Image: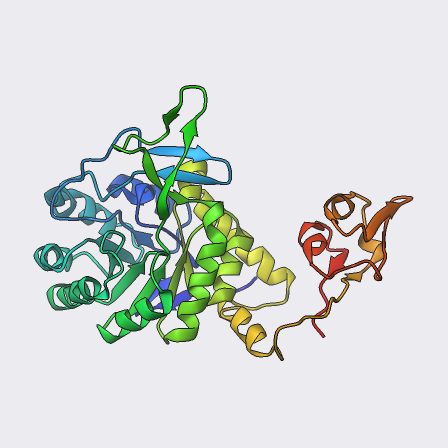
Length: 364
């Protein structure tokens, strides 16, 4: 069995799967469900100096993703300090308290959070592209709480520049990414937007966000030597492995918890373990940043087509490769794929569609 433990900013996570700041940890009871569901550590919903007035409706599942108009916690900060954080502190897992948003707000909250938090996560979702507010917020958090500070970055930024600015301001770690938007979905039966905001806009999360999250994590990991919490589109163990290969130390999960329940956290951790075992890796650290190593070893951009390798004994004759080959280079004959390398343009699509992995890319 692979070792799933992660040592992060002085904390020991029993596994690399955490709830993300949001509805999964909206109060102490929800955080208890996260712990019982198998989380490696806990992350609260973002606390600010007032309770949020959230538009309704404010969540919707859409094809390939999820929309929300979530803001920060709907609970007043006093309730967090008097009830929710004491309950979370009793659960026996490392506790990361999310706070937002301005330096002034954080300076007022940080001393009150200090007795409960093992680390602080700062949301920068509403601070825009100017790095100065983020840097001021980091300073306020570190001065007021005296705890390690994790900065959560939004995908609209130049991720490399934002990561460098966070490091220069004293951030101890980075969480990436927040939800993307504005985005919009419409109920075609009524013509009404799914979200209850004034203009119908919301923020996109879920599986559609994962490729963007992977790229952002990859950029950050190549820019600064800070530990990273990967966030965005994780609903299975293999999703988490992808973010870890991009450079994340652990992952946070929000949409999947909302849609599947808190037990999905432990399910993802178990799937990570199964994948590591099946591929001969002894721990999570063994695959961290693997994609960075692979890209660094490339000689340059390939311009010559390289047809995929084909292992006929694995082919099931499902025809997915044939259906999607726009170059008419692959056909299934008598239940077995036949590849015409003279017609193949090496686009790689068939490899990504082949579930039994009968097709694989050539990297030589």
